[in-house]
View 1 (cartoon, rainbow, N blue to C red):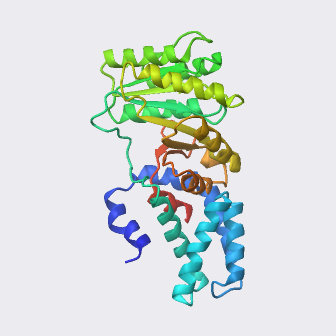
View 2 (view 1 turned 30 degrees about the horizontal axis):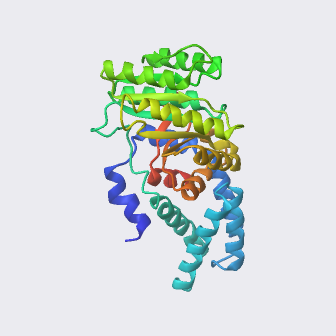
View 3 (view 1 turned 120 degrees about the vertical axis):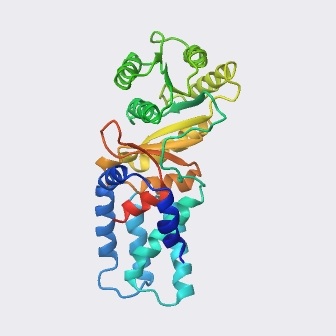
Length: 326
């Protein structure tokens, strides 16, 4: 049984998204899928077998779908190996082979197996520090994440440590009210580390399960950002010694290659452990998820596929590839 068939049969049945979540994912990736498959159809038009021309066209399809040059070259290399091994490959098989190779590539980051919002049983409170530039959907992602964890039965506390902008504190307050979870905040211009410290103390006293800390999204001064995030981490560890358990970088999927640049900048400024890619529903650039996951070897943990409060999903690589090729 092929890798892909195996993934999409027995394993997938045991850990698939709910029907509703799967429908949302299909709809959210519709623009990316339609664009990609129409380009793919043109790339193989009039060809009966996968030859150099088809591979050149395929390379262009992947690059223009924001998969990224390096990841594209990896995928093409793998397909070339398949072609030379199988001697004759028909273009009708290309779709299946592409799915297999992309799923295989995503599997190498050792993530994307989850279908539900869960946290490790031995980490309480589980502390997530959220980073990302303003405008990528960072505050919205925190609000939706809080909502999903709350729906899963966890007690959640938010920390407004993006004290650089008054709007950031206000926006987080609106989400806290909407979701119905407590928020710890101070005045604009307060020390972010102080807010993080207070948030963790409050979470411990309330016996909370999950803490989500917002941080400032400035990138123009990388050294300043690095120092600030390092200080926030150090101060948090006075309350919860191994905090933060996750540093979640939020990226706007609709910006395509710009999301790669932001990932590069933030991974240089702090140790990012996982990614959330937002706004995939409004764009044909869904391929960016594949490229970023591969290039940075950082697991994509959550994806935003709609504007609704429940439209932030746990990233499941099998379901993602399945929807991408619909």
